[in-house]
Image 1 (cartoon, rainbow, N blue to C red):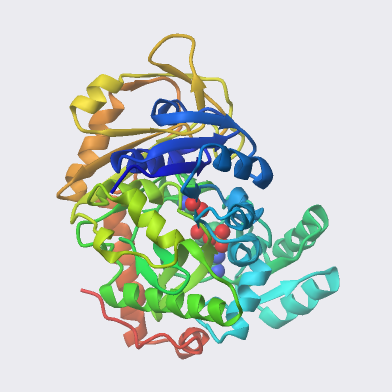
Image 2: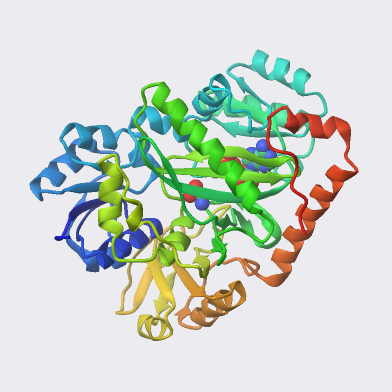
Length: 469
Ligand code: AMP
Ligand code: GLY
């Protein structure tokens, strides 16, 4: 296959990983983003300084360089309809248009879409648009612990969970009303579910769903799932492409939710071409969908792209964007991966930018530890970078077991100096044990089942609970 000219939109860690995978497939890479990612800079034939939401400028650049494919990284690019502008100019694009992207950009749209299409594997929810709605919804939910979510994009950071981010029903009521006021958008109130989360990303070519390996993302800023919700502090994937506490049956049920979603989209005239990402909670009664994203996850992309097997990533994405994904290009190695993000101190609450990291790239490369740059700018000396306010750099380890993959990342940390925030519990044996035990106890609980609780979810129709172990 001859070289494919690809315009990649975005410049975070996810886009650096996408850029490297495209580079491995000998694509000729062009990048459009408002900041310069030092890793992407090296790979790009040309780097255009534009906003990721500026569809007109991005399309003009794509035409100028004769791009045969465009790939949208960030949620903002997808949500603002850059995909529509590119496709209107005849450029095959990975990333849905504005209307379909509402599955991520408007939680109210997503919940209503799923409900009217009979896709019931979601938490019980109410969309509130006024203080009166809040009162009525709270009366309906009674004592059920709730989650309060702004409808619009928040980078995964705006969701408030009872018992974690707030204590009493009273506080929840006030938070919901405050959010309505401050965002001027609807707010979703939903039941808080108990379980363990997993990310399922799939390629979607308008018609079919092609799942990638499952990934566990660590969303909270601090060890033990404490601190604020972040974009994700790190993640892991395993060699069997499941998670220690997520069974093949859970995965298959989650894939089925996504397949029904895509066929409902087709029915409603939405041609979804891109990556669909389901954030699921494995519960005692099967997986429940917490949210959709209309793009690759970050850090999840770093896990799956590491085990993407082959040199055909650009042709794979081109076949997707043209509406007929070529499955011969779709292969993932049976290897485990661990990703750790290093972020500015205070990330997740109030990050302090400006700190310098010294990175020994040569040693990392020698030890086969992958480094991706995120929100950084070149530093004062060679081998240094300055952190912005978001996740700065990611280290990725790949090995035949999770333990070894984690060992590689830990070894890699010796090659990075500076003052940064990082989670220490990602993919550790203790963390995995805790999550597995939690899931076992929930699943065990269904055998001795609390009837009221089970009904909440069996209404949503997942298969009978899978007994773990
Ligand atoms: P979201 O942006 O909807 O994925 O929410 C961000 C995070 O909030 C999720 O990853 C969960 O950790 C938590 N969360 C969201 N919805 C629920 C829910 N219904 N029950 C429990 N936790 C939730
Ligand atoms: N890691 C979560 C996200 O990409 O939204």
